[in-house]
Length: 310
Image (cartoon, rainbow, N blue to C red; front, top):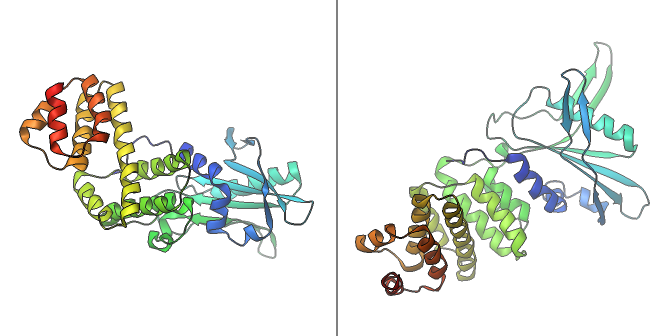
């Protein structure tokens, strides 16, 4: 149950630009041994024109960083690909060639494949050769998420792991568990609120659960350590509050009611049909007030009292 109309480019570029060094550390730790982190600088968007097709392409992320203990620099180019394309390796070489021509410094090229299918292994090189000799062999590093097992990243204390597990090789029956584990890992990282929101939003975008999966998700959370459980529930609550606000802004009362009822279930437990009916009769403004008031509720009695007053 993936959400339609996800802006994949925006989500991935925001994640990688915020946690660029963490991405490199997670997948290519050897590179962190010879780069100077404090010198990282993103370059302006590089626009390339494909003469053959007449189309313009922009390199996703190009960062400049200095070699440790040296005055020289190199580039790290990360290209995020959300669909399989037969000519992708040639495009990677074209990016490399034009970046090298412009900056004339070493370039470390990385392709991040984020799509679900196909799961065949993607190429990591572009070659030009003849029967009697090889003219060119251009190689690039590959991170193909749909061929990675999310369980291998459970113990990685890395914010990129917490996000990208949601796009790795996941069986349908594992979706709820993976979402819970992504948030458990996120809760251990102690990031600032903005970074927490970025990663949790990424996870929620790609792992929207059905009502049945939601119950399984809750069962996993209940088995977490108390502190982790509390922090994960805060994240989940913030999702619901945001969804309620969006529903109210868009005048979607039904969606707002659904989210309020789910939030009530988590705060005070199951409620009677009479109370549910009373909530259905609330106006959008009252639903917004109730969503805010719910944060202070400890029991069904608190809800009943609030409804009587409103």
